[in-house]
Amino acid sequence: MTDTIRIILFGLAGASLGILLPGIIESMIQARQSGNSQSKLTGGAAGAAIYTKLISGILIAGLWLYTGFRFDGFMAASLAALLITAALAITVIDWRIRRIPNELVLLMLIAGAAFQIIHFGIGSLPKAILSMLVMMAVFLVPVFLGGFDKIGAGDVKLAGAMGLVLGQSYIVPAVLVMCGALLVYCVIGLFFRKLTLSSRFAFAPFMMLGLGFAMVCL
Image (cartoon, rainbow, N blue to C red; front, side):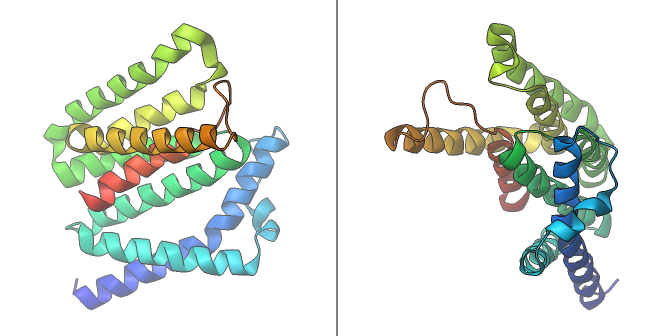
């Protein structure tokens, strides 16, 4: 496949998915707010404004183009772009309604395992699974100490997916970025009195920031 054809394919795929993404996100939000996780994905399409779809299309197209150049191999690049796109969707949904869709976590697990095998080789998968278990164990510590009041079950599952996607190679810098961003957010929030020591807020945006940084920058 020539570079020109690859650029065209990744650009078109990213733009198409980006235009559809706001509607998919709205559908998932509506499904969870109504208590029906089986709602059709077309339900929220009308809730996404045209300019939102255009901005999303441009953003995701740029992301897919970048990953097309960043990763060797069509499949590895496609999986990386899909994973970062899913991370963006999880970020928006958790920020808005404090819930993480199980179907997106499952998508990250499946695509993450495939990405590990294709990009790093089959030998990396056991270490990636270990990384997944370690991440889940770390996030379960506050659950054992204080229950699910601060850390939700979705956060624990997402932490596991994050560990599997990044594996041993990228998980440490991703966690450092996550913790750094979380610390800055908390300090600023406390300083301006937007947060208190008992405040609850979405963890997924910080987790996905770490994941995106590791996949795009390392």
